[in-house]
Image 1: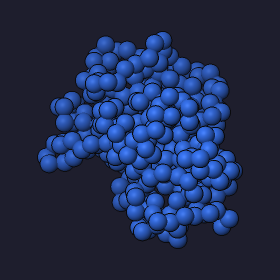
Image 2: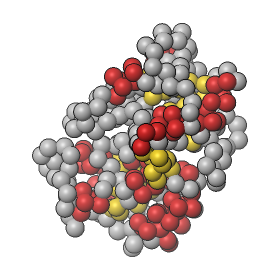
Image 3: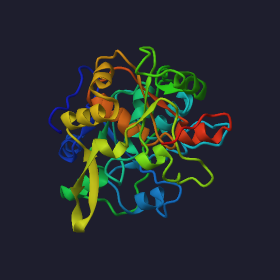
Image 4: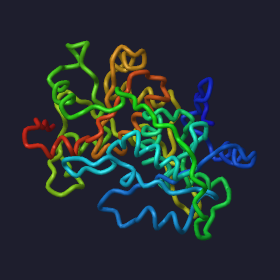
Amino acid sequence: MVAGYSSSAGAEAPLIISPSQLSQSLKREQQVTVLDTTWFMPNSPHKAHEEFQKRRIPGAQFLDLDELASSHELGLKHMMPSGAQFAEACEKFGIQPSTHVVLYDTHGVFSSPRALFMFRSLGHINSSILNGGLPSWNAKSFVIDTNPPSQPPHKSKYTLPKPDQNAVRSYEQMVANSASNPSTSIEAELVLDARSSGRFTGQDPEPRPGLSSGHIPNSFSLPFTSFLKTEEGVRGSTYTVFREPSEIRKELDNAVGAAQAERIIQGEATAITTCGSGMTAGVVWLGLKLLNAPKISLYDESWTGYAMRPTSKIEKA
């Protein structure tokens, strides 16, 4: 485990675990389910499920974040599923409420935090991400399974969860909040945008054709990459892992100022994470969780849902 990270009491698992910790858990035949939650941008040539078929952590199953999702009026992908959808998926994976679920992706850290946000927001606190994902597992010389995936496990029974009502922010809530300046209003929630600074300022285009770049009024730029560092993998490859909490705190200070960062950490202000489509907002959400910030929400639609609406106010520069 990275220094500074700790697990909570009771059934709550550590937010992140290392490859060696996962290996030990699997060797002890503890009740552990490993899920590959890899997701690629729409313009990527990679296909997550096809890559899972070729290489995976032994015993892992594939969780499609676009499939386990609620429908949306604008056709947005990977929106938070209902409790019933989540419970049905858990049963398919053989997950019980007591199961320790470990989530990973093939980037290192990219889409697995979004999956963890889903599990935690739907009450499954016995869940973690694998820091560094499959590349870190491979770099530490643990076995990679290249055989055809095994048969799915026997279905389990999973109690219908009660979603955390404060986990997700709606478009209407974001518009209302955008009218308040956090520097003058203590009621304002601090919106942290995980996209690149170029997309935030409007200088760079969005990867989704026809979608304007820019940002929500009174939001802050905090690229998700600032919470991560790069490690060397096998055969010259690289992958990402989380920075130490002290470094994450410095990045938060740089983005919003030390005073506002302290308000977030102390629970005096709510932070709302957002990104392009709700995926890498999970990285910033998890980084703040590692700092023990108590009030963190995620704008599920994120920039795609916001900028698609013609009535939205878009700021640039």
